Length: 106
Image 1 (tube, rainbow, N blue to C red):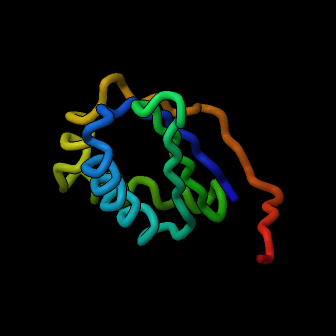
Image 2: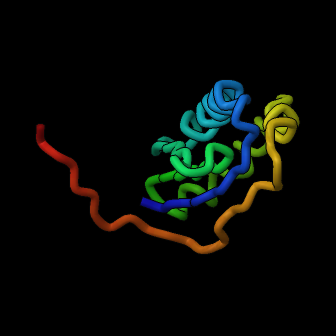
């Protein structure tokens, strides 16, 4: 799976609003590309969030990202998200591909 990693610094008291906005943004991405998104908050710093976006392939991402960005531009989600941040979003410019995932059978 093609994986993108982003780091967000969010006002701790805005956690629920951050997650609500991210849910709406995720819907735009996942409805177009499939895949999954995970939101991880740092236990030692409640401002820091890591977001993992995983898609079937880099090719699929490249083919569909423009459509997603156009749909996103028609909303106020980016402005609402930016209002919650304490620092600019850091996107990892490296490309990752997940080769294996091990999950408990319990």
